[in-house]
Image (cartoon, rainbow, N blue to C red; front, side, top):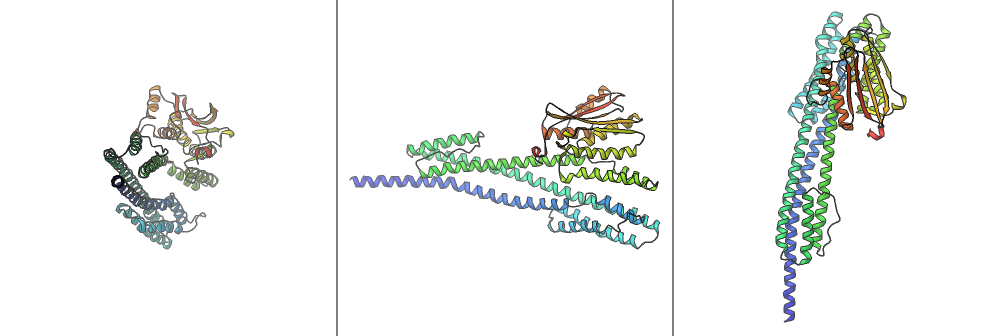
Length: 482
């Protein structure tokens, strides 16, 4: 009789173990499927993202000064200048090689159309260059330069920028879709976990107390996860091996979920850095053509030394603008950048402007976003000095105060009325306003990088002048991560 009773208890234990095993299978199988789906989708998105990113990277090798370089070299060639290096075949071949590689990897229709246009225009440009080489009459060569070369280089550069725009838009759309799908999948995981939890609670009532207590703790853990507690804790200890596996799996899932959220957060930071780079790209020096006209005028007037100096300053200006792709540079580099800009403008406006830069040497190794001071100096020239219509003075100074660096750009130009000053101050905080774009762009970049305690403040008095005060933290290259 006892043996019969023992066999019954054993059969009941086996039955409970079988049910528990089925429960675990019901829990783990959907989770594994979701993980596989997430992994598969992640791999697909990663491959697509990498392919588009490679296209953007390859397209970025295109010479940003392609038009200016080719136009200038062709101009020297046509006028048979001593600076002529022959036909700029190498620049055109480089652009053509990049375009040919991109046609092999580009899939988006709009992007493919743009890059094919670049390739065709490069062929046409080479043909037009050869026509100029075969033409002996100077007037005809100059006409071909104006009507063919300048137009083709402009189209090549425009279509390459169009290609970058479409690929960047495609990249952004892919990232948005990826984030949205990941959010949906995470929601599915949460919903699935809740459904499985309810199932476990219903079945666990038939099990012993040793199983119920760990499961209750698991429920509390899942509730904490639902409220946002994504810290990974030591797994709940249980006497039953299967329950222990369940609690271990939950903590593993939390760890994976936290890593996924951290990755998404990093991607968002990268997006903001990209927006910052695009914002910086909008602050381009728009005095290029006037400067080139001045250089041509100096050459035609026989003032070769002044022309060489101006070309050297223009070269330095753009070299510091590019800064080898860095978004953050030292104050010394920024000083050289604005000095080149002011030297160019001083040569253009000889009777209109003087300047002085006074920044202590001990501050020059600290960093700031590039293209920070140049828009302020440009604003002082065009909206301050030129409006006064007499010789003016621009002063750039720097000092240390309360652990921060204070930079000031001051002019003795036309100044602003109190009402106008308030309008400009308000525009610094307004999204989408076209008022004071250069000042607002600098102000927003400083706020994005350093916080609301930094940025620009303005002071101005009519017929006295304007002072723009810029506040940034003291950061070295190591501290800023550059």
